Image 1: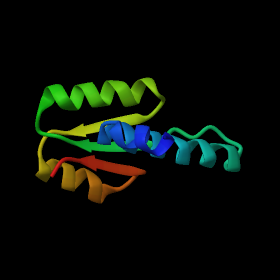
Image 2: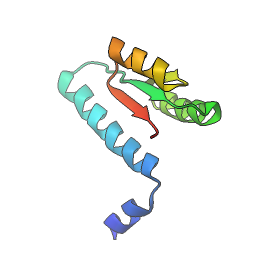
Image 3: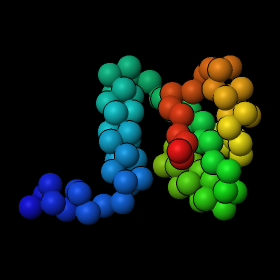
Length: 87
């Protein structure tokens, strides 16, 4: 029953819950405050702002790139724990 409920959740929600658990464990293991950095590459500004707001409220530091070229440049500069993009 629990697995069936999990499968009905939207894909973003499933990803987010897994990601949050991983970083909570990292914070506990390291014994220090850890604010994960996410690079969000999304060309639709409304979607990008919505995702960014939700993640920021949960304590993630989010940078947004509105096109692939800018996103690739920022990603190659490093410093992010996760790259999130649509394909």
